[in-house]
Length: 179
Image (tube, rainbow, N blue to C red):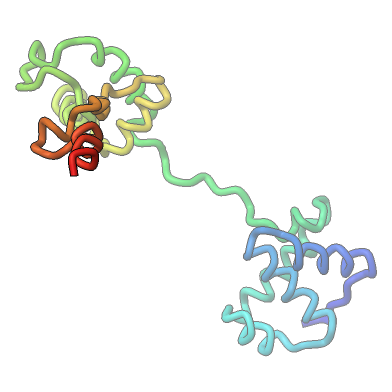
């Protein structure tokens, strides 16, 4: 590998990133580049950071290749596509169309829609296999909220101890006066 040298400005920025960034990967990359600039070998850095030597070479290459970005942009991960959406994005529309209908009209033995029941509906009628979580996210995007029972504790009347066989405050006061 050719000798690696940082400018004073780059070194200051890497030191700041290494001590202030909330992302561990960027902090690790910044520290590796600083150690490399100080003269440490690639093998020593790879061993200290528990990465392969090729990873260190990749980080140096990324720093040199992305000259159009600022230093933080050079250290950051490149954007990735990620997993494609389940149901090709049609789940929201299909749920919106069926959510106001009674599930019994479609042959289900339930009076209300649930996430697992909507999964079965999408599988049975549209051949789209989705998870319960996908359905829940679609319902959240559609701003549909499930009805949940509210459990409220009733206020106790003043004589609740009497009804349970205990003494209330009036009985206690009367018993202390009699004795």
